[in-house]
Image (tube, rainbow, N blue to C red; front, side, top):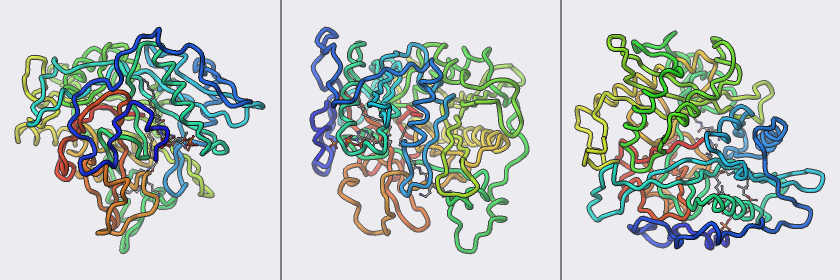
Length: 491
Ligand code: NHW
Ligand code: EN5
């Protein structure tokens, strides 16, 4: 069991009893190391393979990665859909400010056939929870530790090269290259269970184009339901409703940065947007070229960012964003692409936000009932405007995970739980949970029913080489939690 992961500096207790992760003292698993201790030569590869660093600023190399992913990357459980990252998306995702070229690792085989690549990009810092104490009292935000962590994504092996224990080689090589830059931690997500999740989330989907979604088998149609009834159910107004809702511009970067940093203080684990350069990259670069065309946005637009500017004071009170990640439809004669929008970061100042001076427990839900109500109403209005924009820009479905404060709007905005990736066959209600999932149950935020079938499918967040207690708190929290402590959204 886990011949590879057993050897890695990750929490090992998965499946190890009723409490899979005991309250850990937070901190690195490995003793501190020096860059000078890191081996300088690449890991050995089987004969016929050669390491190759991908230069994402060279269009041909980016295109090569895009092709590999579009043919071999993540699929849904019955292989109907595959995530279809575009070249524009990869350029945005892989080259944020300060990215390290050597972290984009690939290899070639003779004749270039089936070159797997793992790609990664730097994430400036992720903030882990403070040392766990028995009563879950948390330190104020300014006392929480911040550390540099690499974000791992796009791990992919060609279909012809699966189950040959090549993934561990890629992971070890990318670890070496990250270590050479003096970084010893990483964050990543996956749709499979490996040791050991610090948190889990679930995918939710909001139909925008029900006719197409039913046609391609994405949305099941219930007994007694008709397409026209679904179309009416998911209908949306012609344009956004919130006064002052508009596209974010470069001039908004400082205000959005401030608001976002304050709002992110709500989460125990968060991405820190250190500089305004990062804010500009994640929310304004990749917004495509040329004029905004109704029904399609801008050419090559990846990220869609909006603010609410108070008409009276010209203050930026809210920010919300989503990104475009199409899925390839593999089994349909007519439809080839599922245009999917994914909720990304947001922030609002309708409630008091944690400041460094606040001693309120970050991540603990300290919102008063009135604040929770206000926040819920505001997020619903913001997301609704995004649904409207997305619908009219030609998106078929809007996805969101059960992280951040998303649970406050998912139900009212008619998102429904997805079938995720982990469980290949639905489990009849009442039957026991497969053993590999038992260990993860305490970390799910929600129990979900889908067409009368209960599913436990999670996308866990992991931390490499960092001890930490489970972020969504105690066992059974996931049944009741309305807000999550996770403020890291991975692409
Ligand atoms: S998750 C998406 C991953 N990609 C896909 O699912 C695409 C389709 N699948 C494939 O390409 C987002 C292959 O199945 C891959 C595995 C390449 C996934 N994460 O080569 P073998 C990310 O990109 C373990 C981690 O024979 P394979 C995040 C597996 O448990 N480990 O398998 C990536 C087993 O180890 P075990 C995974 O199917 C995070 C071993 O690989 C994994 O031909 C990476 C088997 O290897 C997954 N998704 O290739 C970790 N899937 O111990 C970064 C399988 O159980 C860690 N495995 O025997 C941090 C590094 C940096 C640290 C810096 C300080
Ligand atoms: C990289 N950062 O399984 C992470 N998607 O639910 C990599 N299901 O789209 C890990 N099977 O439920 C990625 N429709 C793991 C995700 C891999 C892709 C994946 C799931 C997530 C998905 C859809 C399609 C199902 C098709 C049949 C799904 C139901 C929607 C319905 C709408 C109405 C209300 C109820 C739900």
